[in-house]
Amino acid sequence: MGQITLRGIRKSFSGVDVIHGIDLTIADGELAVFVGPSGCGKSTLLRMIAGLDRPTTGTIEIDGQDVTRTSAAERGLAMVFQSYALYPHMTVRQNLSFGLENTRMPKNDITARVDDAGRMLEIMDLMDRRPTQLSGGQRQRVAIGRAIVRNPTAFLLDEPLSNLDAELRGSMRAELAGLHDRLKTTMIYVTHDQIEAMTLADKIVVLRKGVIEQVDTPLGLYNRPQNLFVAGFIGAPNMNFFNAVAVDGQAELPGGLRVAVPGNGPVTIGIRPQMLHLADPDAPALTGTIRLIEALGAETVVHAAAADGTAMVVVLSGQPALRTGETIRLAFDPDALHVFGADGQRLD
Image 1 (tube, rainbow, N blue to C red):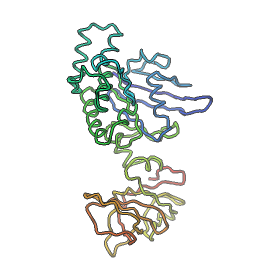
Image 2: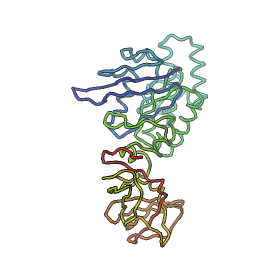
Image 3: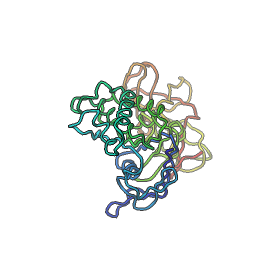
Image 4: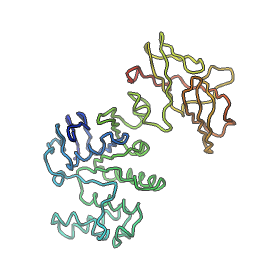
């Protein structure tokens, strides 16, 4: 079992609140990702779950048991740090077995656990090396292996891939996803990288300034962001936003294109770059002037300025014949629009 429940969690440093009353449940076996910009409180929240910091107010429960005042060593959790935190003077095998030796586990059991983790992570041929003789990806495998051998209630991972290059991060993401699928153990993963969040998570917790903005599945966040912040944070390139005024259920986009929207008054209309396509010559269109073209082969990313000066990005398939300085005319499915009210909340 590995259900983790946070109730009314607040954290202050020197009288300044950084976590503002968080309530959250992470189900047994779930891979939950905390994502948000730097300083949003995601690592602080993870450290409180781990027992490395204590909340100012609120309770933390693991499988229904209050562990708020329980030491980190007694919570049955395993943490993987961004810096790997390996002992440089020890071999890989010694790094993996050190924590188990401190619990006075029988040597045969330690050897069996270390070998199981080594085979799972494909590091058996590295057992006699020291961390300085390993690549970044190999060190990360050892750090994860050190967590696995403890057979924890849950894994806590604090930006574990941030020190790796882009190609290695991609392969390690796939390995972590496969590892979670095999172990079926609760994992909480902290990252500022939305691609990691979208590809790994069963559930994403979007944080900003110590507050949860939305909790949902990756596609739930992408398809139905509940506010402007989530809409702009999730998805790459970022969602395009246009300010407009709704009158009797209609609003006008740059270039004169009118669209149906809920309500009346000021609204922000959002549309993802991938949902735009070139309009037919005689059809009503959203228009703009092309400022930059990024030809990527399979797709083309167009940066343009709308008629009112609003910047917009378009992702088109293939290699359309476009030039900077010319006018681009764009169409979209009306169902692809996201509309937000003056308070930044989604309108349905």
